[in-house]
Image 1: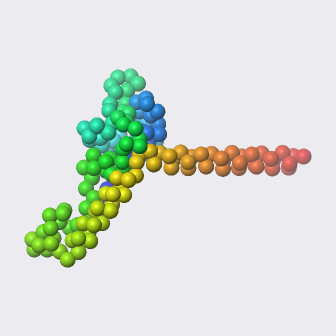
Image 2: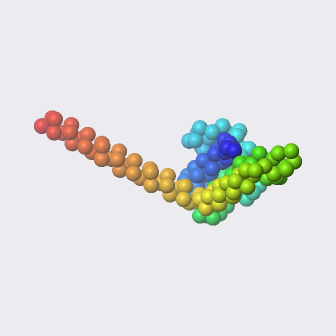
Image 3: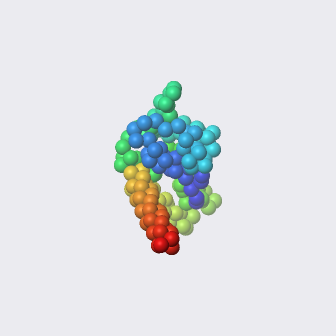
Length: 160
């Protein structure tokens, strides 16, 4: 079981959209440039996200994509499922035909793991991810400011 680039990139792009949009449409070219994700790949992902009504598109100059719901109402699990990302730890895809058309002895373990993964991904909202990124950005801005200020103070004291 692993989460492929499809699910990872969809979540990354949605976080970028949520952070950059502020209600206005954001172009996929902008997301592509910021996140280093192929534009054609984003077009495929956003087609699926649009069909699942997680985003809407605006045509024409100043067009792009915007979220259709508040960030607190969109879960990571929803985003991953919207782009057809299967997360399944079982060998049989949940069909219980793991070993010679019978359920294997560890099937229930992997089924329980699937349930926990989906519960966790369903409990993390786009809002949560955006807030974490904003907090990180704010902290790094403060550190940069302090470092620049201390550096400037050192230069001033050396010249005196």
